[in-house]
Length: 356
Ligand SMILES: Cc1c2[nH]c(c1CCC(=O)O)Cc1[nH]c(c(CCC(=O)O)c1C)Cc1[nH]c(c(CCC(=O)O)c1C)Cc1[nH]c(c(CCC(=O)O)c1C)C2
View 1 (cartoon, protein in one colour):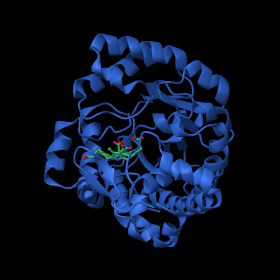
View 2 (cartoon, rainbow, N blue to C red):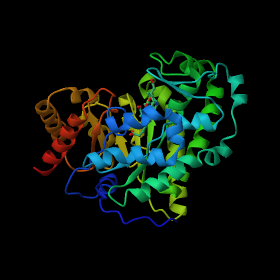
View 3 (spheres, rainbow, N blue to C red):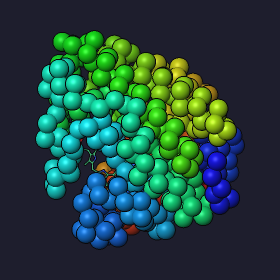
View 4 (cartoon, protein in one colour):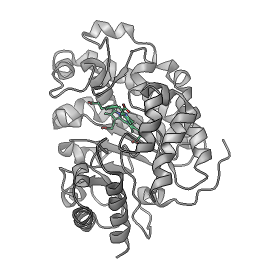
């Protein structure tokens, strides 16, 4: 096990475990990104995936929001799509368009193009190096979060080849090729387990699994095509981390648009459930019960409002969540055209209402 600087702020780890904290911890999804001028300056010089593959650059932009704001966690700069890349698919970042796969999986026979998940950890060593470097450079200021995409979300990108409004190509697989869908989800899950365990070994102190495309499914599809894999990932990663001497690694599941599945998800071993802004925090608490930490859920677009309106929205949000078993965040990520000052106002408001 590596030797890292002593952790000075463990609010988020405590909140994840349900321990009492005197302030509500806060971080935001996509806190490293194009809304920050210092990020755009780096990004102008280097291709997106080259940044991910260069530990010095990944570390540098991971630390940018930590240097700027009093956040309670850092999240390693990378992308969920490094898993398809490690399974032998080409993914390019197109300016103004986002990630694009030139040759997505069209039919189940295309799965023969995929490499074995056995080699994923080897191929993603650069992420582990970035994590180790960043954990060192953080000097214990805040914990470092590692992450991966959930299997359905990754499968959807591999088949659609890019973002999609309907996900009709990947949903066609679920209905027309359920067995092959399970085969693909199994491959992605095995890759993801090794990848997340590798992140813990490299220094990640908490993990988030992004089920960003839950909104396209329903309770029945989620139960068949998501739950078993989310369960396998959580159980196996926790078991390995514990066996390796890292104790109980806190894990967050973020099912974006998955309001219909919250109760089912609360039966899994994730410590924290992230909710998007469409879910009422009081209803979410009823559904998941008292033994899970909730994370979220301000509409990111609230950051387009005035500082006064952000303050009022945070006050309302925090009254609904309460201060126990709660991690403040947005209900999804920052957008590139957001004003960095308004993120500061969001964080300040969380601190203000977490004290009173
Ligand atoms: C956690 C994370 C992600 N991407 C990035 C991070 C960095 C860490 C952080 O949050 O600060 C950097 C990250 N990833 C990307 C960017 C912008 C790229 C650029 O600079 O050109 C950044 C900063 C590119 C990217 N990568 C992806 C998209 C969405 C495409 C779509 O569906 O239309 C996009 C636009 C895929 C992706 N990537 C990620 C998700 C899950 C979270 C979510 O739901 O947004 C998803 C769906 C995860």
